[in-house]
Image 1 (cartoon, rainbow over the protein chains, first blue to last red):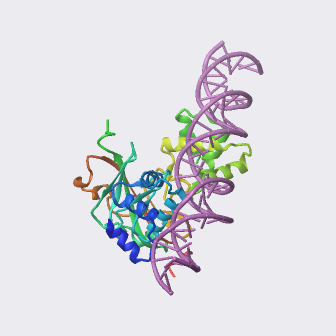
Image 2: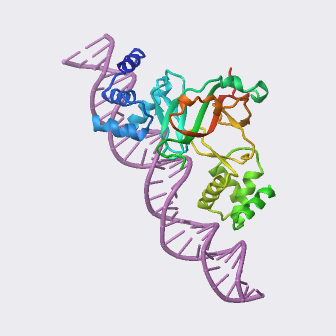
Length: 138
Length: 138
DNA sequence: GTATTGACTTGGACTATGTCCATCGTAGGA
DNA sequence: TCCTACGATGGACATAGTCCAAGTCAATAC
């Protein structure tokens, strides 16, 4: 976690109270918060932080590759601090909860040349959907 | 296309001019429109159609399984009329264009039991990302 | 063909999420 | 300690989508 702060400093980040709080909120949890949830938690530590700053900081963290932006539905994007360990997501269709998962197989290799239409394909991202134990299959 | 209208009628849909137009806009193209794009095209055929009706109708088509809702980024959802042929999506990181693709392999099978955390997993959805020939890697 | 009725449509207000910008504040170097 | 450019602020704006009360009309019954 302070790893993160150190990496940011090493990359020339000016370390402000606001950025520190946002980075800590993300790094302190293994869940996937929305921007608003980050804002709420940041506000409880630093009441005068603004919405714009949270969005800016999240955007910067994403650009730096420290955090992954996840858009599993049409709702708010979620921010995944687990950017240094490749993984995929399992989403509950009931309550929206997200778990990180690690499927076997090489997804990129599974897209044959004939299905690439001249694209330079660089990334494959899977979303598994189902019901979590709480929402249950009935 | 009139297949679609017939299926809808068979399911008890009251066939209105608005619903017909929305269904035709979707079924007539193999692209993936946003709700606003559907509205624009519907409006050119039926000027007095309202935004709410387009959203309602799209939502109903999704519930009936005739159309798939695709949220590849945090922007507007897109609607994919190709619901009866399982496929995945290849998205251009440059311009947002979407192609339907058919990877090999069984995605669901690639998620080991130990990675399911008690979920009842029913669906796996892949998004390949890269640059299309127009946006180019160079 | 007409009457009936409840499902469908409308448009505008409202909510949620996110972006922009002019101004002010401050971290970090000199 | 001072300077200054980078960052923060908050409020207006933009975009995507939802809700609702009132009006309209497709399908059914006669």
